[in-house]
Image 1 (cartoon, rainbow, N blue to C red):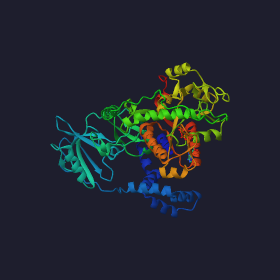
Image 2: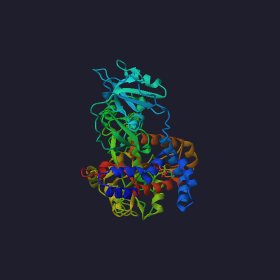
Image 3: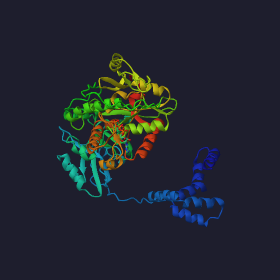
Image 4: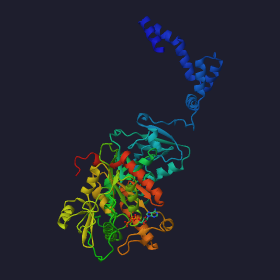
Length: 555
Ligand SMILES: Nc1ncnc2c1ncn2[C@@H]1O[C@H](COP(=O)(O)OP(=O)(O)OP(=O)(O)O)[C@@H](O)[C@H]1O
């Protein structure tokens, strides 16, 4: 309506003076100016006096609704300039060259200021070193990296140490006033936000090199971080994706974290593809025969062979401090959000866990729940086929030479030797299941994870974790552990302890690769959790390594 009136006025009066006069006298403009000065309460009062038409009633109802009231109350606060706390007046002694000086007043609350300062080695100037994204200083939009501090709360900073300046800030109450010379050429940030998976743990409070420990962001391996600032070669700024509303924190840059790891991690990097030599005696019980069509991958000899792989790996665990791992190569792994297209192949599901935790029990239950949807990969072996077995069902029976060729051409996800025969799970066997449109579910020693992590298989890795020992004593009363000598042996106290220990080591060494963790306390609940995790992995967006998606250079 207002626009229509305006265009009419324009047509009537070419030189504009009359138009302006009429415009200022117009009812609609006067009403508009009046309303913008009124508080919400007054509007509602005015409506009471108005004749009770349908529109008035509706407006009254709208104005009384809680969200509208909140909006109007915010408007009223601003309209009445009802700010708190009241900022002090600007100082009288503003210098002559005030153009070059900026006075910044910030109200102190429980939050940290969100900026760090440093002293220039030669000039001794104290400058803002960095402003933390999302922090108080950043949100004020008044402080920038490179601004030179002249005064803090009226105290000249010339000649002071950064620590003394911080002391002044720490002691000040209410408001903080900075007098500063703005940085002449503020860097234009053209950085894109990057998402990474942390491949190591980081505790800023234990890092003597961090410029400000309180501004550090602690993180654990496997956590996804959003990197918002990489301007500094050594200290980046990041948030956790689990808490994007928080203000960013400092993390060591890729280069710095690698350097730290080189300093602290003296052990040999982990070698993922070990060939395991058996030193155990023969003459054990035969595996129980199971003719169900999805028996592949549950064979006892295969499991015992894998168990030995684990035992051999123990020697590496005992040599290493907490974090012996090849994260030395890449402390952060760039990740992207990936959602499988319904027509794409399914993601490989890998279950990892310490011996006896229930990996096979859970896998078996999952496959039995819907064999048309889930299937295991049939392992390969060099042992002789038994009369009741069928090639490709229990195992693929191949010669030692063929097996070794598969190993050399990196076609085995994991393999080992047991009782003089080779056993292994091949990438081809996984591919066969995936090509049939099924979800392939395998269990793997964690050492095989690195080989399985390819853009083709896009594995989703689930760690099956034991509950507390007390809990296992209760739940594992009827459980049976597979050993070399006994088929059905009850769990002993040492077995439970070993399971707990082994789970801790697996988490410490490989936790960064686990997409999901299930505590196998109650079997039914754990099975239900597994089923929903597997469906989520296929149908919902997940963080995956960026190279899987931008995969031109991927094997
Ligand atoms: N939550 C549970 N409560 C009770 N018993 C369980 C639970 N999970 C597994 N079990 C039982 O524990 C025993 C060991 O489980 P399972 O054979 O699946 O272990 P595993 O992790 O596959 O070990 P391995 O690596 O030796 O094959 C089985 O008897 C199984 O039924």
